[in-house]
Amino acid sequence: MPVKSLRSSVLVWPRREQVESALSSWSQDAALGRPDLLQAGYFGSYARGEEGVGSDLDVVLVVERSALPKMRRSIEWKTTKLPVPVDLLVFTRDEWDKAADAEDRFTATLRRETVWVYRRERQ
Image (cartoon, rainbow, N blue to C red; front, side, top):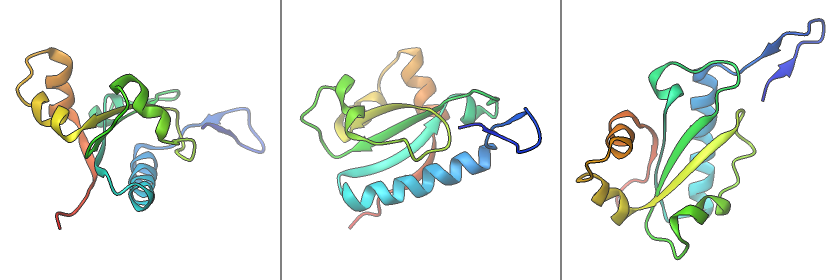
């Protein structure tokens, strides 16, 4: 979140590198408690280098499976430790694999733009 300087009214927004590093650390920590987390990445303005003051972080997670409907999965993930607001999408492995064949514009952009910061190592 933006923080006020002690002597100025100017808000300072975290740099892209800080946000990416925070997401990477968050993903590593999340994976410790959630072994079903397979991949974590970001897309949107941060991935395109177009972020600015007030930009949120668009995050995509791929999990092994989930019993929850897609629209409710993000409630399981606490993102408040990240330095900017987060818009979170959670796909199962099967959904993500099927998205490779999807022809809609959003899915194509998501697959092309996502910058991965975490991938679980295969065992």
